[in-house]
Amino acid sequence: AGTVDPVVRINGLSKMAAAPEVKLGWVAVTGGDADVRRALVDDLDTRHDAYLTVSGFAEACATVFLTDSAGVPAPDSGGPWLETVRDTVNRQRAAFDRYLTEIPSLEDVRHTVWRGGIHRVLRIDPTVAAMRFGTLDDETIAIRILTETGVLVHPGYLYGMDVAEFASGPWFVVSSLNTEDVLASAVSRLHLILR
Image (cartoon, rainbow, N blue to C red; front, side, top):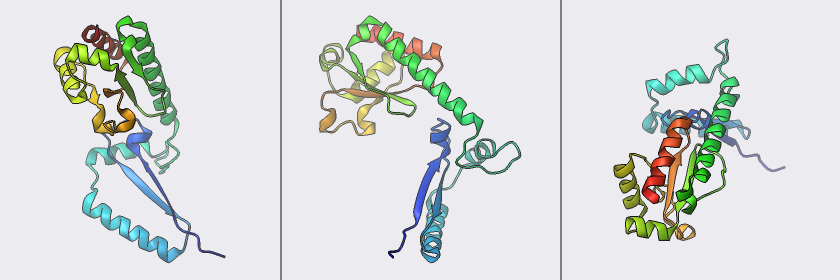
């Protein structure tokens, strides 16, 4: 029989808790030959110590989010808070979609299908972008939107949307973690700048 390679599983609190500012991740190594697994874990420990230090804030968050009520570590279960996070993100995404479709001047903003995560990917119709902003450059448009409306949208190139399959841009990424009133206000301000 052939040898079985170790299995490496990666997870992180920023993804589980929809909290991108909490930089805390972990790696679990299972299976395979014990000596190979030990060498891999030693290498990962060295890299962690050299490059990936954890902030005190993230460590404190881990104590809250990654233990059960008795204080026992439960790194992949998430606990009841995980369902609350998922429900909140889903509710915010649904509200954002509703606001986008209810404002007539945003009919030229095409939004993609949700595939998970806390962000929304938007595309402004190129003709509208050229007429309103005089450019199709996503960074230039993002800066104009921020300075004229106070709404922060991230230019798509920061997320790799400057390649051929995104040629029909400009593309933008926005967070869905804001409260519904903040989302409604942001979309209203986008309506004003895009009309």
